[in-house]
Image (tube, rainbow, N blue to C red; front, side, top):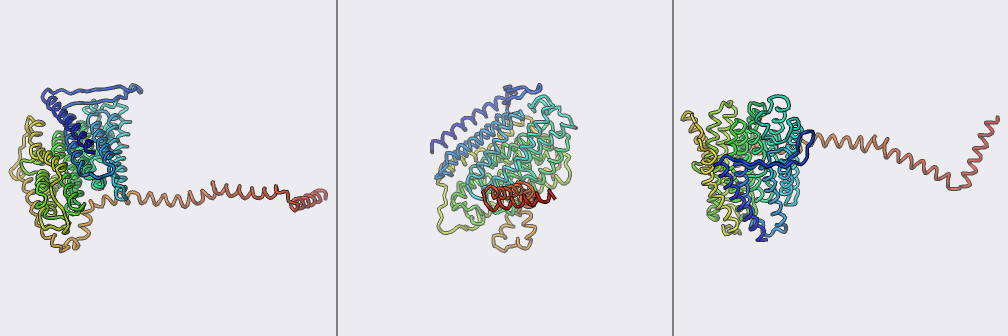
Length: 574
């Protein structure tokens, strides 16, 4: 068992280092490798298996493998005692392999290997703990992602008219109207389902039913980033299209909605999941403004500190008797100083604290967005979402790490698990130095930022206001005054992601299931049965019973039939 997670970790770590070195070589030389195998040709369109190996795919693959190696090593202790630990390890490795296929595929047919592989394995991981809650969450995850799978399949059929499926050849010259516009709309739809943008956001917090190491992997660098990565590759084709404007509005709303919902959530893992959703909105919104390189920069920087944050949350949950309610924690920094330090580091990076990993990408995104010709609604959503991020982060810190100790008397909380703390330390280095290093590598020529001092300080101002409000409001809330009951409707609406989980499950299926029940009772089990199979069966059975009576050689039947024959004969003769 030990050798399984250690060997997997070493294999992925060596692969990560190799990919990062190759990425640096590609950045320096400007080279890329394009490998293609033709499988068959159909109406002059070749169905091929294609790989693209450039600096972007190598760098993203290196980050995915590095985070996966840390997660697998961490799982060695977190999943210790699980009777199916080997199965868990194989599922995680299949998950990483699917993401790898998606990263290096510039072909819509070969990309399905990774795209559908992520959907299938994520379902198996979400339902890993076999209970009703996990089953419901897994079904919501799978069915939400199937919408995007259908969009990819429709896009494949439209690409047939281009003469091939290697989308890198066509994104620069895709027609604005006709099939080109529809094709871009389908790709954007697929990316929105995978990256959980409104109205497909409900599945992302529900996927927290999976084990915490899986959450650390899924919400940092694999499943939820697949849609963002696909749109980064497709970004030249989105310029000047309606789908770009729609994506900007929906991603900004997602960013705001997730930040607002996290301020009313008490489940530790769901708060971090909603913060992931908010950051995905940031990536999608800046991508829709035409800055794919900034979206990729934030994608990598976010992966480092979000994986660290989930690992810290898993260590906390593991220690506090498997509670996930932050109201049952408090004062953990005195008992778990190392985990508390790493968790605060990840939280500060998430808030964009200068000079941590999140600062370099998030601050540049906000400044470039404020310089862009965006409308007032998008501008306000950006500013509010930035403040809400710091607000729910300070709330999380107050409830879990500081404040009063709210656990019972019998507890054993410590940082003694070396197997869990070692990978956290590795990711902490990335959370501190990753942003600056990536900024030097990806942007050799810096962006020209030109704005007034007020706009330059706006991100810092809203962050400070959000942090102060988050701490002061929850300082009062912990006294259990139940202030939320005074504004019950608003709190429920904000804390339930604007009723999206309800609308995505019961709301979406109620009419269809009700109509199906009516058709079944009136049609299948009613008139169609009466005049169909059951009615014919009853008629044949009753008729066969009458025939059976005639075939029983009964004297009464013979005499009765003879009498009837005589009566008929008399009437005929007369």
